[in-house]
Image 1: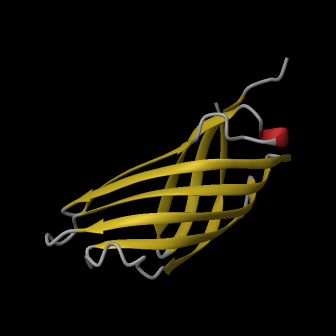
Image 2: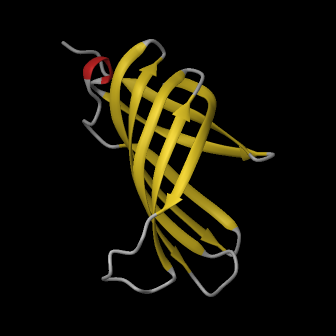
Length: 133
C-alpha cells in the first residue's frame, strides 16, 4: 500500500429538490473540491443526505469523480462515500470504485480517510496501483 496525504478545500452547495421529495429531512448537494499535496487535482460530485429528529444522527452517500495527479501519475478515478452519524459518533467509508481509474491511474484501488481539525480538511489516501502487463 502507498499513502498519499495532503489538504483539500471543499465547497458544498445545496441543490433544489426535484419536486418528488418534499421531505425536509432529505437533501441533495453538489461537491466541488480542490486537492493539494500528493494528490493534486479536483473532485466533482453529488451527495444525498438524510437527517433525523435525533440530534447528531444522520446519513449520507456521495459519488465523486477525481481528476488530477496522484504521486506524479495523471488520470481520473471515482470515490464512493458512505457515512453515518449515530448521536454524534461518526462512521465514514470512502473507497475507490473498482475499475474507475483512467490513464496512468488505471488499476487504482484504495480507501481514503478525511480528517477535519480546526476547521481545515485533509486526507489520508491508502492505495495500490495494479501494474499493467
